Length: 311
Length: 284
Image (cartoon, rainbow over all chains, first blue to last red; front, side, top):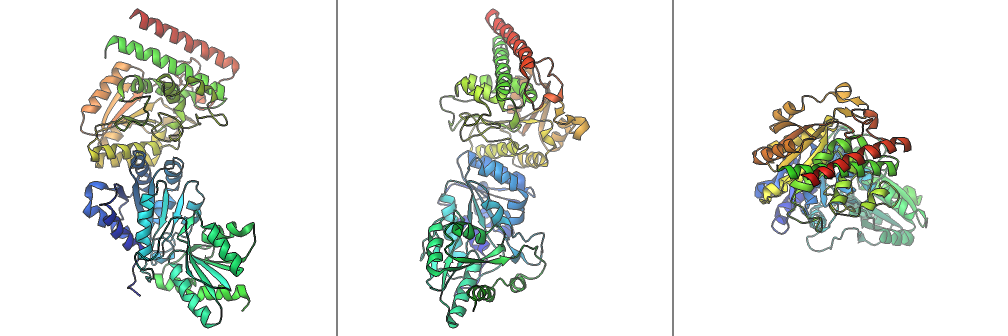
């Protein structure tokens, strides 16, 4: 397995690379070093706008740029890009259906020591609720790089969730095709389906191995696009295994778990349990410690599976 | 500006006012006060200044206009209809189910609308984004925007003002429609934004103060602004409800429609004003 890397790092690198291939502008709000848009800014200063600490303006400026027909990529921490500027995203971006890509880093609890004010665990719930919005949450570097290109090619608003914390790499560049709205089956299984997104995909793969050693066969699906959800794939595996555990570094309110439950509600073809951050605020600690603290790891997933299967 | 141009603009503005109040009356809701105060600026832009083509609303090289005070769209819709972007019959369907003309501007479905607006402050930032593209790409189109003097209480407006100065958006011209009132009362009483000109100057802008109902003053100010190497703001002193006697300077007309008897008065006053303006055009 390759060395660990944060998805924001892969994002910054790929953005700078794609600058040659596509015409787009990049905006940041005084966090370009952290979000990694600085890599693009250095290469293409004439296509970059640092908006200062003013996220609301940044999002609406992005909308104005996009209204001229050129995509705009706006980055900040998830808390500010999506949280603070929510209404700008809704009214300036989503309602007019403009090609603004909000690439928000430092999502979830893995922000770490900064604590609850900066650990945004509700962003996907909020973005999912918006008409016209596509919500993307890549798992590692290779998937991030592929999906950054997909969202630039896509003519509409996108929210992409990126992390600060260096995570394990398991996709090999070019080996898997990443298409918006299409989930990826990473492992076949017959007893339960683990549906994961973002950095929990790696943990789900680990959990699968642990479960296998205990005689439980788990399928694993990477849902990198929370909205539109790959309902067909989710339903197929829910029906096939009868049991589903969703896992995300996000609140269990309104995120991947609720998206899956909504999709399966009508057919009620599986029992579903959500794994994620319970309806609470985060706290300060190193990211790795927090993942343990909140059970956001393979063991946490294994526990949920066993409880669900009564084993 | 030539006298005949001024007379033409006065006649067009009178027509825009007639349509605006008629549309709000028909919709049984909407914002007549601010529509009437900004009507002259909008008329000036759409009937004289802007490089636009109603037959090709999305012409790439066009000048852009963003009505940041989006609730005053009855005036903008009326100007667009009179300019030939769409049939004036649409104005009668304003705010009704299935209508093209939404309660606030919708760029996706209304020909001639350059940006969807309505939530205050956001349009101003989007205008900055458009101007920034033109500046960076070397396009010579200009971006005009109009804000209310209540709207500038929004913090986002000042974020955008800083942005425009930082990126030297000398192709951006903002009008602030200073009619002195917002929903809850006089702006000084609710949350005093004054002095507006000095605030913008402090943010690095070129600021001028004019009579927002005087076409010569509007034209002079815009030409000065175009010559300036800074982002420009034109503070327009205006009368809220201009042209309808009982609406003038009465903030209760910010956001409600006239009832039948009230409309009869407004209709007559605006019609008479238009007849006079049309005669002036004829007589030169």
